[in-house]
Amino acid sequence: MDDVTQICVGKHMTGIIGLESALAAAAPWCQVMTAGRIGGVLLEMLDGHNYIETGLRDVYAQTFIGFVGADILLVGYIFNFVM
Image (cartoon, rainbow, N blue to C red; front, side):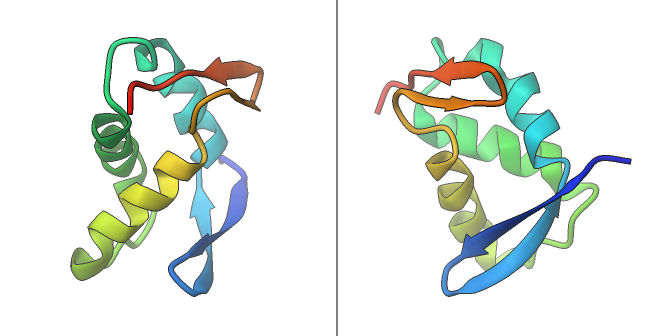
């Protein structure tokens, strides 16, 4: 089972299962996709193991983008997105 990572979504803390694994899996796409598209991809990857309320999907996607912003070193990868 993947670890749970605590993140702030909007004004609330929540646990996300598999965030680090999803970020590592998404790393190869960082050079060829926009940040918005990567946020959507991460949302789809994480949706199966996490409850993500329908009305907050865009907020979650934006939050996930924050974890892969330009020049952030995370789980052994440097993410460089086209914004």
